Amino acid sequence: MSTDTDADTTGPRDRIAQYLSRFFPVHDLDDEADIFELGFVSSMFAMQLVSFIEQEFGVTVDNDDLELEYFRSISALDAFVARKLSTSLAR
Image (cartoon, rainbow, N blue to C red; front, top):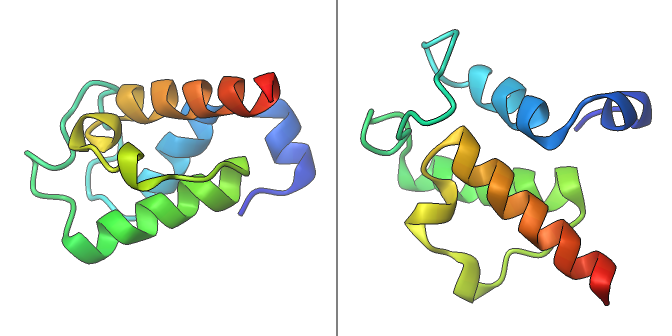
C-alpha cells in the first residue's frame, strides 16, 4: 500500500500502473493493453487485484462490479476507480 505522501502526489492511474508492474514482465504496459488477453492474470491474481483496488483507494468492489471490462486494462481500472470514488463522495 502507498504511503499517505504517495497517495497525495500520485494519481490512481499511476498507482495502478505501479502495482501491475510489480507482477508483469512488461515494464511499459500500455494503458489500453488487455492484461487478461495477454495472459498476465490468473484467477488468484484477479482476486488480488480486487483487494488492491479496495485497500488502495478505500472503495468497495461489489458483486455487480465484478465485470471483466472494469479490470482488463490500466485505463479501465482507472475509470472504474474514478467512478467508485465519485460515487462514494456523492453519498
